[in-house]
Length: 144
Image (tube, rainbow, N blue to C red):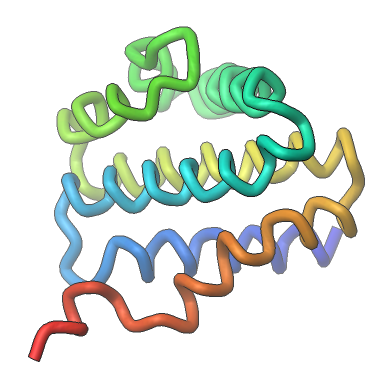
């Protein structure tokens, strides 16, 4: 279980880094969407687009059942993996709630994938999703 908690910390750190310092709800929403897009790109060649969408939908369901405070947000999400709708739902939330939603959703997705294919393969498949965002400077800091 320590590996999973380490991965959970890495997911949370990556999301915070992608959102950048002083992130508002829109930046947090974009960070969540870009992380999900990177996860989709990493996993689609292995489990297919429908497999990734099924994991996403199941993760939303588990988020709502595990954290009743997220149920309203999860209920507003489209049935498929339509990431274009996600920011409009998240901007209705407070910055704290949007960040909490992203952390729970991404961690749940990761945990669910781990139960299906194992921790080692999951870590290998998604390593590039977390590590580049932690080693790069945030986009706000790249301007001169």
